[in-house]
Amino acid sequence: MGLKILLDGELVDKENAKISVFDHGLLYGDGIFEGIRAYSGRVFRLKEHIDRLYDSAKVLMLEIPVDKKKMIDDIRVTLKANSLTDAYIRVVVTRGAGDLGLDPRKCPKASYFIIADKISLYPDELYEKGMEIATVSTRRNIPEALNPRVKSLNYLNNIMAKIEGTQRGVAEALMLNSQGFVAECTGDNIFIIKNGVLITPPAAAGALLGVTQEAVIGLAEARKIEVRKEFFTRYCIFTADECFLTGTAAEIIPVVALDGRTIASGKPGEITLKLIADFRKLTKSSGEVI
Ligand code: PMP
Image 1 (cartoon, rainbow, N blue to C red):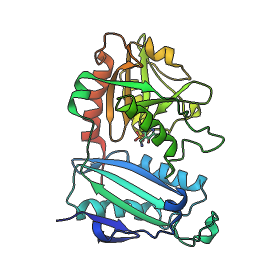
Image 2: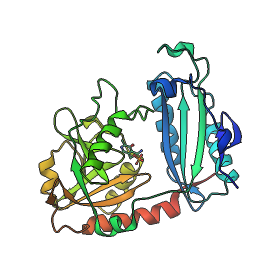
Image 3: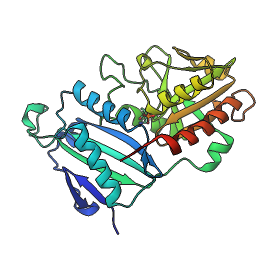
Image 4: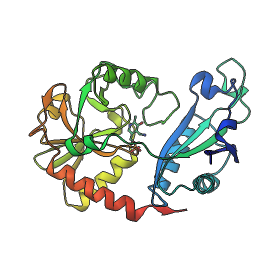
């Protein structure tokens, strides 16, 4: 059975899930999205993802055609139609079809669609041995231009960085903000651990406020680990005791080297491994059954 996509409230076959070439999501990247995950039939941090989607819409003055309750119901319908219990769920809202100008007022109705598919992760080996990352020259968008907290369809900033990372032979690239502070990676938030303290850049450093990032902070606090959100530079990563990335797709992935410098012993850190174990338990036990 082929994949079923929910498009503007209707389930359609993948082949028939089509959007107008006049859609401003395509013409201008004018739209928003969320990446959500279901584990054993439970949707992890559903409320947080839905809230972030509607907050992104608010900032862009984009009216999502359905309310939060209906969106959640549509996610349930999409999972059920594809018989998926472990899935990656992509929710996309586009400005809709308009004319060739920029003006969103010419797009009378936003479109939305939901794709639920099997999840593809980084290779297992990277979780066991940790990954190497590299700093790229593309800086993260400045919040005064396009706030990275808005999860918009315009991901070119991250894509430029991803291309550079790929050229350098790494699976994830580190992005600095315009002042040279660490912001985040192309699709993941970053954490370091130094002297037992867990540190991650605040959203003000030019990062998406990650759902996984917040979940990990909660897990660390439950272990009585001190957590700080503060600005830091590459120096702090080079000299950290541990480092890892977080994201809905990646979950928690240890980082063992940056720009050719081995981080501490070059092996996934002790606290990182504990948080990975805690996170696995949390995703299995806490998600919402919808
Ligand atoms: N930063 C960026 C740029 C991202 O695209 C993502 C993944 N959506 C993240 C961080 C991680 O966020 P989350 O934990 O909410 O998936």
